[in-house]
Image (cartoon, rainbow, N blue to C red; front, side, top):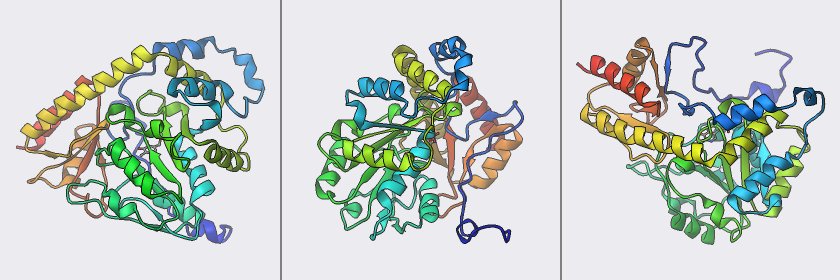
Length: 352
Ligand SMILES: *Cc1c(COP(=O)(O)O)cnc(C)c1O
């Protein structure tokens, strides 16, 4: 604490991201990054980028990227918002829509950034509990609220909700904004973008960090009704006019255009997930069904914190959360087939 800090700063409880180790020799299965590099088309587009242009500010509206996203998802350009990673898109959306009289709702187990934003923006929240199978119980959200948000597939559980269930909730919840955080939707499940024309209070948020191998470029986006996007633009333009740099836009557009590469890497990750499912089950792990690029696992005989530490000793980094209900689970991101095999080899050493 410093006397120079504002009361707001003193009261913050910042988000702690998974470790980005400074050494290169770790097998990194802890932050749900893509194990494959960005598309060769992305590398080429960055190489061909005229670096002299960097003296100019970028287009404040990132229209080239917005149009590419609008074409890709068959929506209008004014239904698209882009930001510096979906974390920024989410933060702006919390400011734009969730600062209300009534508390907002999100699950007791979900993305741990949500309570951090609430704390920063002084937003009240309630957290309906996942059921014993770690599923979101949508009936719990059909109550008076200042807004609703959850990841779909949920993180860190990996469980997914179908479009029909979402539609059902939207039919009941018409007075507040529902944000569906689809950071992992490309790995399983159906995007709710198909519902935005029907429900003006639905905002779908996605990212280039996971399925498009661009976590380092920081590109996120939201798709929703014109009125929601206008609200986001108002907040964005009261905060930072140029959230996306020219290289990030160049990379993102090229990634979006290379549909073949996207499909190949996506399928490889899904195949890794199926393979790990079998291997981990054989080692006695219990796995939740995952629609994401990670699995959420526990072992009836081994303490999760201990497994985490022993894996790290063997240079395999996974994610451990010490929070209530999930402190006996590990979240393991999908690596390449080779990395997944190294994980299994390490676990076989530990579980003797
Ligand atoms: C990774 C993740 C994000 C953040 O993604 P960025 O675009 O890299 O900021 C948002 N929501 C969930 C649920 C995530 O897992």
